[in-house]
Length: 215
Image (cartoon, rainbow, N blue to C red; front, side):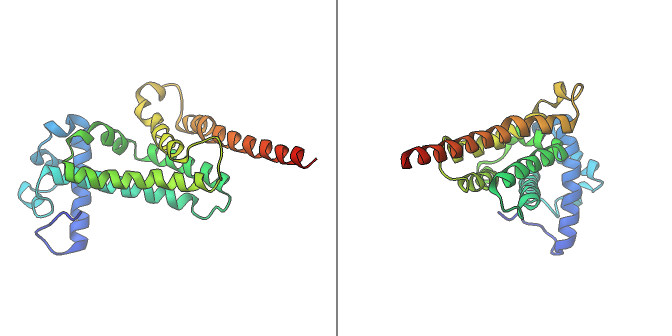
């Protein structure tokens, strides 16, 4: 979905929208989307109120651009960190760890995406949900490569994405006790490595069954 701008210079549009989004994130953190005003966002971004409308048409556009940029950046970072690993078991672990690391890097955006999503217009929300589903599908494709077993690839992929933001959504109570790497290591061990153990156990049992059948 394309957000129309009054100016034609694409590099200028990209730069100004980046400024607007950086300002919007700070205002949304303080006040939430509903109470935030375009004037406050413009002031935080260092752009005049008149000029901001050269790049967006409304506060709804700003929220959509935030979600669109967040989802795109998130997926590209996760995909790039594990794309060259051939072994699907190893790739699954690396991709999930990358997901956790990116969630921590973009923690303010993650929090806003969960707390402010209810304000997104329905037509914008459909586009955003499609982008989020790409992340789920990325994990599902890796799990599909592992073959059939005692797991549902779609359900497992959704749970990985859900559990991947645990450290951010619970940061207010976890951070005083645990560092980022401790939280990431814990989630990798309890989510992906546990899944890998189940998969490897299934492979061993199937192999043993085949040996007994041939005796």
